[in-house]
Image (cartoon, rainbow, N blue to C red):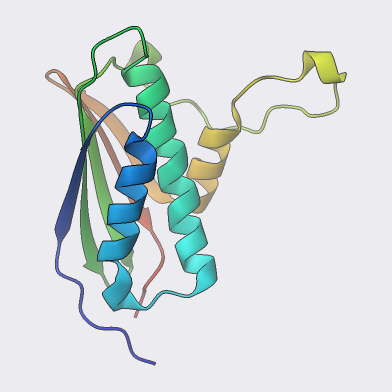
Length: 148
């Protein structure tokens, strides 16, 4: 079954408890014309959920005011080009985490709470770049899905 052409689109939500869920639903709905298979949809959902949850948790922590999160998407032959922007706190030292897998051969009480998200993002997405531009965080990536 051949997929249709997908026009560029934008999903905007306000950070908060249900921001990731709402943005994911809107984003996946907008991708329907591509007729992606389960694996491709799962990759998109996993990567975006990790990114959005990090924004909600760290860029706009619950003790701070909420703010906008925007996802721009364009479809090219080599996949989906995503540009994710927010006005929350910058990443520590203005850099993305390395995305290395934390050692798992430790006692249960010594296991890290997080750290797996950036590992997943860096291994499932391509060309991942972060920059702080003025008062905005810009995270750009390519997901090699819906390729022709």
